[in-house]
Image (cartoon, rainbow, N blue to C red):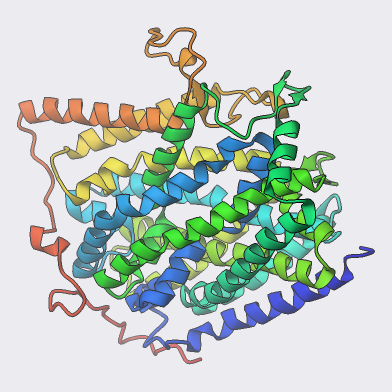
Amino acid sequence: MTGHWTELIVFIILFVAVSGMGFVASRWRRAQDLNHLDEWGLGGRKFGSWITWFLIGGDLYTAYTFVAVPAALFGAGATGFFALPYTIIAYPLVFLPVLRLWSVSRVHGYVTPADFVRGRYGSSLLALLVAITGIIATMPYIALQLVGLEAVLRSMGINHAGILGHLPLFIAFLILALYTYKSGLRAPALIAFVKDILIYIVILVAVIYLPIKLGGWGEIFGDAQTKLSSINPATKAPYGSTLLTANNQLQYATLALGSALALFLYPHSVTGVLASRGRNVLKRNMSALPAYSFMLGLLALLGYVAISAGVKPVVNAATGKPDTSTVVPELFHGQFPGWFAGIAFAAIGIGALVPAAIMSIAAANLWTRNIYKEYFKRDATPAQEAKQAKVASLVVKLGALVFIVLIDPQFSIDLQLIGGVIILQTLPAVAISLYTRWFHTWALVAGWVVGQAWGLILLYGIPNAAVKKQHFGGSALALGKLNIFGWHPFPGSALQVYVGFVALVANLLVAVIVTLVIRRFARPLGVDATSPEDYHVDEGSPRIKEPQLDVAAAPERT
């Protein structure tokens, strides 16, 4: 701990102050009754432009983003920049679909994407598959917030083997669990203001001060190219390059596009959208959110800055392996005075709380509405739904905590890539169904099964020589290894492609074929509870469904 006390004190002061904001958030924009899922899980659906901007930004640009993107550039070079184009193209892609989803959800009182699927197709099975997919894809994402927080703790000297090394993490997430339980979505919405302001201050100072200190960007890029072009003894190949190679350009493009398509399929992204007040709020946000991509670009460059500064990752005392997630924290520790490094560490730590809270709430909403109420208690009151969601949010956080303690964080990073492949398979049932009901319910189920199964099979066969893993070593598939029932369409090709994109193509192809076959035999669809007009209503429309408060339960007093 020698030399870390100033950083630790500043970190604790800011962390405690922000946690206090989480507890008092229930008084901010006071709810009529927090014992209602619309109020606890969606903040009353009344957030305006500024709150929504900070909430969605805080939701999508997570603590792991702040450490993983620069770490990717530090370790492999240009491929790590895929996060930039995908966050840039995501907002134009989802501009119209999220407006339609907001409208139909407000008309029918939908809380989750699975609610919409249930109403659109009248199929509890398809809704269940979407709900389970969302929960499974979200769990490792929550765990990854712990990776970012633990990276900061290790850089501040809290790096021990066994349960002692995880104790500060337990305390932080106990606080998170308590204020999320009390305040619901209002807590991360309020904290997001502080988190984003701190992040912007830290990044702007870093990208101006550090290049001046290290001799300029020309020197930094030269150092990065020298290091990345050297040979990795584990793979017998260069670590990477500051430019894309012929073999990874397709993988870069498909990963960016696939990630953009998947971004707003995640339940926590939908939660941020449905919490907004109206379509105009979302229009302004889809136009303004690319500002975060500018910040992300500056942040990514810190990976090259870390190479030039000679940063060495902290060795994880629990595994004995270097933790590349500590690259940015170690850069701040070595290049800035303790008080500023403490602010930077607090920004990353608080950046873990905001998305983790929203993700746990979104997963809890899925459990409550699409599993508990659908299969266990159809007549659940609003108060019972809210209580179930609060408890479920605690279970989800505990599961993520156990996950990170028992499993090598490197494996959880791989699972995040797997999570993207998994959630992408809900695109036909959720996003495409906002525009058309042409696909048959059973065709969507068949497509989902094929997409998930083939995606996982392909992921299982991908090794990672750098970390000595034979399976689930990443999401980049060499086309030469693509096998379709024994047929190799690209024999010997070293060109790589994103597995999620390949699995989605298979999903859509199966859904189309099965739909055509079923329609040939005139099999009927389930009842569609929505109408074309539902997808265009806006704030103030008499067709909007307001939450029905549970009159049997007294409003929560705070």
